[in-house]
Amino acid sequence: MNPFTKVASVIFGIIALLHLLRMAFFPVEIVVDGCSVPVWASIIGFIFTAILSIGLWKEAGRKL
Image: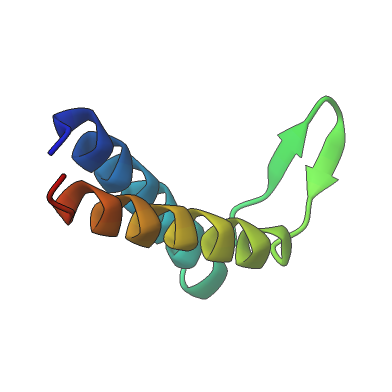
């Protein structure tokens, strides 16, 4: 079991939670290099980071 994998999984989980909070409760305007990032982009970010978090957590639990 690699502790780095669990740490990465938790970090991705926190990022997924932040995307979910932005979509549901805090529609904060984010501007990157003068371009506004729409709230719907957080849907993609949430799905992507949640899948990474779950996948890494499962991998960390495997016994080699």
